[in-house]
Image (cartoon, rainbow, N blue to C red):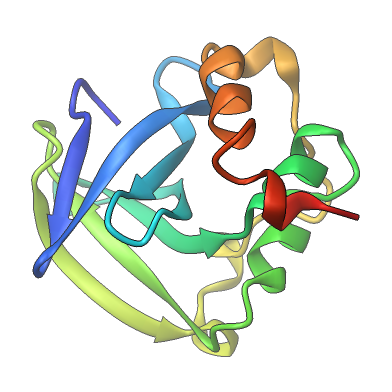
Length: 145
């Protein structure tokens, strides 16, 4: 996601924590909504009308931990979020939200659904330390096995 460290959807602000997958640009990033402390994945899916299109969905601290351990795929994390919908965000090159579309998960184009074969790859994660640190302390209660 370019150089933007936060974006807004309505009255909610989402703060960039770090990139989980980077290849010539961010492909999967972690965001936090500071008021609720909820975590979200922002997953690049397409380029549409000059904007980058991203799949945006909530991720639990436990699911994030299991993802970082290689125990959950990208698709597992997506479907563990019990919400029946996800959001598609169109962001311009400056990281400004141009459009938000809420879509039912069954209606999501198949090429937008995260891959069942996609697992965390530490070598593609430039921000592993910062992402791991957010789980320590703040979310330990939610990660108990």
